[in-house]
Figure 1 (cartoon, rainbow, N blue to C red):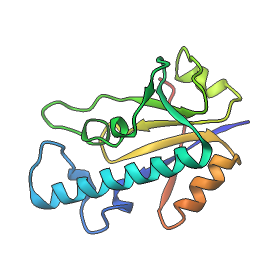
Figure 2 (figure 1 turned 180 degrees about the horizontal axis):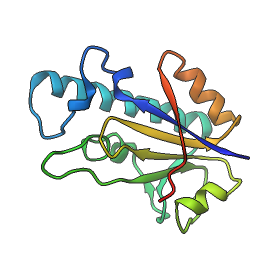
Figure 3 (figure 1 turned 60 degrees about the vertical axis):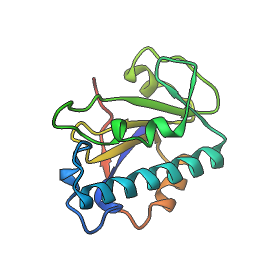
Length: 155
């Protein structure tokens, strides 16, 4: 099966805020409010996704399960002018499988979802098998969002 990706821009969650200014160190009330909305939405979305597919979350190279709070966090979701952002990848699947790289995850035929943060902190990316049950569930769940198709990262 072919892997595809969709981008979820935070402007789908914070409709009345310019989400290109979400600096995690900014304490402006409007920025803080929007970041809180994104954190709450991400936590709920991931909780429902994990429950629906009975998945666990893992780092690409670690068999230790990750808690939702590690992904639904300012450090993963938002850029910092002072500290920049560390690009990270998490795999959502039933059991841990070790992958040597993003490319090896991409070539696997297994079910599951790869979640990646955006280098500008404006959204997240989800990758999965095209026309899979995960693909259908996500597009149904996010039918009110403007989703963009994104190519699989090569590095």
